[in-house]
Length: 500
Image (spheres, rainbow, N blue to C red):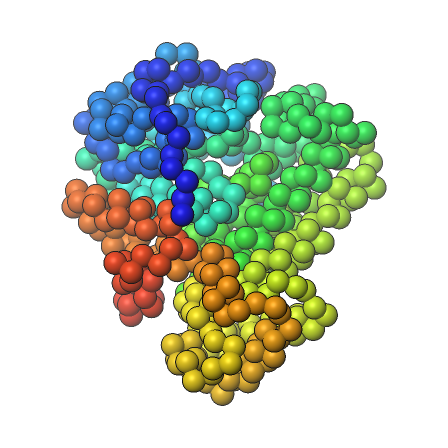
């Protein structure tokens, strides 16, 4: 059961905006004003995200809210800006990038957290910036809805993520493959600084700016590290740890990011920049959710390796701060043990196992082998596994029917039951624990597509319904059973890419 939201009292006009990012020198950003959109309207908004800044959800329907979070109206004390960064894209150095269609409106105090904790509010799609690289700086409705829903779905799953406050839309069109309606997504995080923010100054041979950034990140975001023997090495080690844990969480729910470029990696270990993401359906370890990724660099099975590679790219950029290759490598050395330990803990919880035993890796490896062979729906399998009765194989039908090779399932289930007998846990207790970590509902691509198509006809009810379901992904919600079913046949034809 989710805790009730705290009492909320801020109106849009009473939010105490400031812009801590402007403490950095001018080369780090460019001040600018968002480009207004005509006749904006509210598409969707998240009350639970609003609670993070004590914003009253009653504000959602006001002109002040819609105009402010479209970029048409700048709050007092907000100083909009776009930040510069660089990055490796698909493993290739891409040079200067930056906020090409994102404008930082400012930051406000984080509700329920001691000062100086703050949340930045960023408008994505609010017009061109100096870093737009010939782009129009706009986002389209479909990608904005997908980012909104997935940000909030990941929060519901307990996975570190940026948050989404709202999406506003306009009938103004922009050209992509076809003309599409524009939208602005307001996203929130303590910081949007990326691995590529450090790479920018390293590759441009600006050691003083690199040090300024390192000090800013430590002082603003990791103050506990300031007293470490080598604060920069401690920062790299902590970012590496958080990144390893984040990706373990992704793997455990079958989430695929799609574009794990270094400019899309958060210095806070948050899931950042939702583009061509997907949740695993028919299990295939080599599945590529991004149609643009022809080489499969960011396939599901590659995500841990790529996250590790990205941490090394950050370590390379931070080497002048840390001082020695040995200290940098020591800070990075934590990735694999941290990832392995977190993944083992998550998988044991998914399997309802309270202890870790020597042969468990064989049980887990054989499970993923039969999931692969039968392309079993990832979410449905783990959810139904919680219903398995230790001493009654006759009740296995709903689980067994997910497999093409049912003999292989029977053999694995025998192994699994033998392992369960070493645990001091009743079926009822295990079921309760497994359902608390194996979601019944995830944001399947086809569910998002249905919501998008209705929204394109100005019916936003499906977005609100999906949001309510995905905020409680572990609850049974029998009235929404259809949202937990196998995807329809047409869903296999959906493709998502970097284009938005």
